[in-house]
Amino acid sequence: MKTDKASDKNTPENWSRQTQMVRAGSIRSNFGEMSEALFLTSGFAYDNAEEAEARFDGRAEGFTYSRQSNPTVAMFENRMAMLEGAEVGRATGTGMAAMTAALLAGLRAGDHVLASRALFGSCRWLVDELLPRYGIETTVVHGPDISAWKQAIKPNTKILFTETPANPTLEMVDLQAVADIAHENSARLVVDNVFATPVLQRPMEMGADIVCYSTTKHIDGQGRCLGGIILCDKAWDEEFLYPFYRHTGCAMSPFNAWVMLKGMETLGLRVHAMCDSAAKIAQAISGRLDDVRHPSLHSFKDQALANRQMDRGGTMVVFELPGGRDQAFAFLNALNLIDISNNLGDSRSIATHPWSTTHKALAEESRLELGITPGLIRLSVGLEDADDLIEDLSQALAVAGH
Image 1 (cartoon, rainbow, N blue to C red):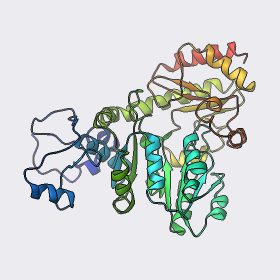
Image 2 (cartoon, rainbow, N blue to C red):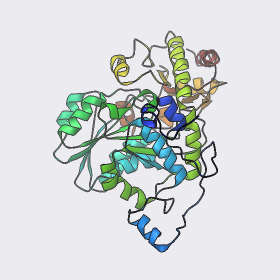
Image 3 (cartoon, rainbow, N blue to C red):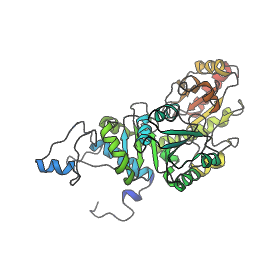
Image 4 (cartoon, one colour):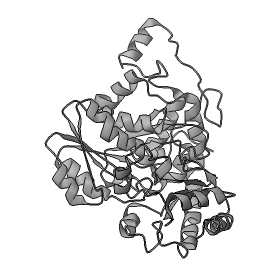
């Protein structure tokens, strides 16, 4: 029988990650529902005017307006914060809303952002195009080169921004080393952790200050809803993030938050199963292609760093077809089981041609600088049987002449 007083170990903070993914942050109404309640409401009523005033000035706890906070969204935010080891989570409508808010919330004209050059295409657009429009200086460096970070930092640098493993090349960045550089210069490290997920990599354990996700990917995991989240400490949230979040309206909808909560219940199981298949697939096709990338392969140049930072090699396999765009398209068009799409982290396996889709907005020279070539394929491994996926990849490679 449950008692009112839990033991020291039987508290959410001390649960295993798997238990946290299922139960952390949940609150029940007086109906005692098993599944988290879906609060589809824009506003909230108050017993009296004094209570309304107290909630708005922070003297009383409670909800005021779903653009600022909502019970279903709060459950998702709290679960993600506990899993990541953060004090605060702010859920957003999309992953790019999270990345944008994480950068803009704490910056002013005259500040400087230092970023790794290997970022998701829209994140590079933020750094290269959006921030400079508002008088914010930006510099990009080769992320794995720690000396480049040290040389490029300036007195007005406020944020260091990176993604590791990088989309789509799987380039690795030493998070602890970059965090140390940031803190030695009174700056904050922002990490896009989408590829690794909090199941495999927790950047805050290596010094990151702010961690962002497109929850559209593995966290939903079934291609249903868009979403994002920013995870940080209370001080930065109170001074910078919450005012930006409240007044710009980038909040996640309660329905999407409910979907994300359901996705989190199976997140660990799905990610580990995908990792198993990704490693098997990478090994199977590495004998047919010269350039196959997955951290489980001994040929992966950053394997030592990946092993140090990540619990496993991840769900993404990247490979290069030497025949360029024509051979890549022939391969993609020959796939029978695997879908052609630009999403990732789905329960269904997805093949993507970054040159013509996710990174097409970048100039050709920028894509080549990042290692994104016309023959590069990004494979997001899903939950199908690994042997079925290998068979589909093998026949498509044969059709493409490889």
